[in-house]
Image 1 (tube, rainbow, N blue to C red):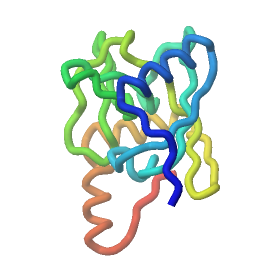
Image 2 (image 1 turned 120 degrees about the vertical axis):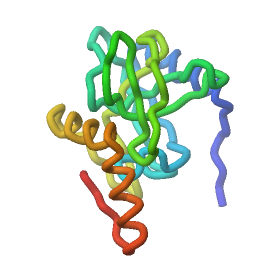
Image 3 (image 1 turned 120 degrees about the horizontal axis):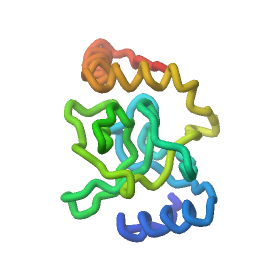
Image 4 (image 1 turned 180 degrees about the vertical axis):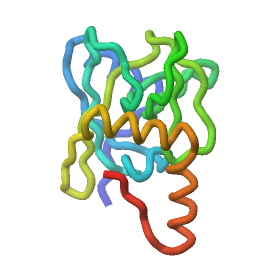
Length: 154
């Protein structure tokens, strides 16, 4: 089995920051299932710079979570209250408040098993953000696992 180059969170964060500063997109392999079903473990995500665009509810973004050893996460923006509130779709709790300066870029493309899909319209992303905010995706995933089905909103 081939293994790719492994990065520590700090190295990966620096790599993403550098790409975004140069106005370039960067592809990385996701690790974990916190964004299931939108992003699965080992999917390849493409992170694009926000540029002058303001992060919007529903966006899936790469950001650094303060107070957690500057942990790098890719989760959905579910609310804005001066700062930004993120949450993994498949997690019951929010990540906490994140300052705009800690948001590295927005995920616009996910590649899974040789299939690529672009993330849907802003309207769909806002609906999914609402479902995530109130733990409905998390609950539906838990129910579907128990009955042997996978619910896919995409």
